[in-house]
Amino acid sequence: MSPFIWPVRVYYEDTDAGGVVYYANYLKFMERARTEWLRSLGIEQEPLLREDNVMFVVADMEAKFRRPARFGELLEVTSEVAESRRASITFAQEIWRGGAGAGELLLSGRVRVACLDARTFRPRSLPDRLAPECLSQVDRAERLLRETP
Amino acid sequence: MSPFIWPVRVYYEDTDAGGVVYYANYLKFMERARTEWLRSLGIEQEPLLREDNVMFVVADMEAKFRRPARFGELLEVTSEVAESRRASITFAQEIWRGGAGAGELLLSGRVRVACLDARTFRPRSLPDRLAPECLSQVDRAERLLRETP
Amino acid sequence: MSPFIWPVRVYYEDTDAGGVVYYANYLKFMERARTEWLRSLGIEQEPLLREDNVMFVVADMEAKFRRPARFGELLEVTSEVAESRRASITFAQEIWRGGAGAGELLLSGRVRVACLDARTFRPRSLPDRLAPECLSQVDRAERLLRETP
Amino acid sequence: MSPFIWPVRVYYEDTDAGGVVYYANYLKFMERARTEWLRSLGIEQEPLLREDNVMFVVADMEAKFRRPARFGELLEVTSEVAESRRASITFAQEIWRGGAGAGELLLSGRVRVACLDARTFRPRSLPDRLAPECLSQVDRAERLLRETP
Image (tube, rainbow over all chains, first blue to last red; front, side, top):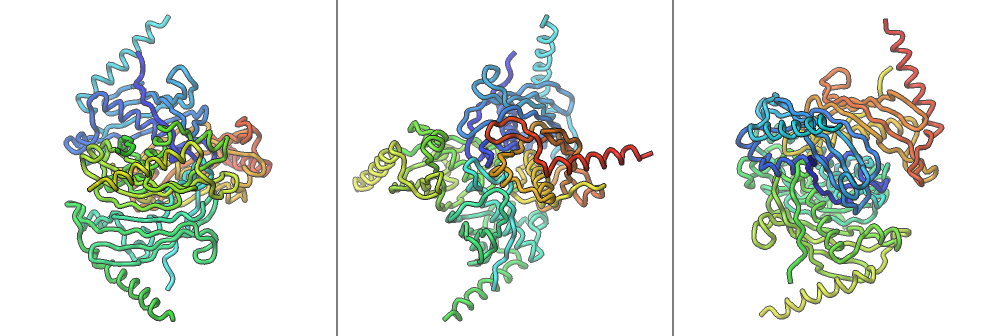
């Protein structure tokens, strides 16, 4: 099983005076990968919000910044469902230079995204289309883990 | 008559790999000064939007980037009403290092902000509290101009 | 002659509480298109800076914000050389929704980029590889203009 | 012992289409507070980098997003040295609305900042002026902890 991969080019807007990507901007790259993973499943967040009052917010996260990315580099951002619960998804994410899994690992992190009712800001269950896909990803990951000798 | 002045400190988030403030980020500084000018008049945009469906959007702008600002510097951003119409305000704005009018001029620009009805996104007249203040600023500026020999 | 076109997806990071793209962020999109135009000519800015001390900075710009872009939309950003001088290039740029030239025009602007010596921050001539390409674009545009009855 | 507190106003640039502060932007607020804590000790990062080749980078971090902040709100960002080692400082940071420790807690996090030699990007010991201040903060915190019945 391979994770979802999204390519990101580093532009001037992403860098800081240290000559490397500003630490908060890696979080933007990570969100782009999560958004595109949803889109790859046929889920657009805008109609979900407008029609079903479903919104996603980051509840907690952690990140380890291993190596800096520089202006002009082409990165690959991965996104995998590490855990899926009724009202939240935890993503394991990585940022690579030179190809996910093959080049240099720049960042690894976990991001827990909660599903909220946009009218009340209270937790609500994941949309029907999303829940089985998350469970299936977690299942595959756990099966892989059990099968690894 | 002196323009409204708002101090802005340059942080890492504002800079790019060139070692100076990224060009789009000066526009953030300029908006902070416009927002604080409104606040200095007792006008908060959030209730204006929520209660009166009034929103402001930038309709057009121009800027001349004269000298770069660097990490750690303390800037002063000015904001003056240059022209006031029924449904828009044009601001003349400058960014200075070392004191507005006294130090080095880093940027000068003009920003025309349109007043919209948030439900229809169509132009609407400025809020009652704002219009006279704008007119008075423009009047003072024009009187000053006439009186200058 | 058709301008260089670069697609940009609108993510949450680009929007503001008004529900549309924050005005300064359109300038990021415009820079991405200019950077990718350079890349399409085989010019990478990073080695240019490191090896030849050549840097580009925005000297002045103007933009007309015609319609807002929203979360999730796919935009096309155009970039054309409108004028080329010894030490600067002026780009005419547009942002479209639904296809450049075919859909809705969201923004039109001009950006003059100056070429500097990175050690002295003084103007210097465009890199040899870039100058003829710019001139050729401008020539084509002027020829087209003359030929239009 | 009270932590260092830095006020931050939420502007449009900080929000997203969800109507609240975009998650990555809280990290900007947290860095502003760390930078201003350094400044309060008389330490400016720019000369430190230029003269002593000392730079700080975030090595790892975690954050819990408890409640969202909205446009126009005035926040307080706290910064405390939670752990100090030869080549890194771990900060405990919080973001509050309505006064640190008194209002509503919006975010709590930990950020480990590594001290690098800017020429080699390798770890180096904290600057002489900074190390004792960090140790003293940690000492005070531990003493307070021991004294608490």
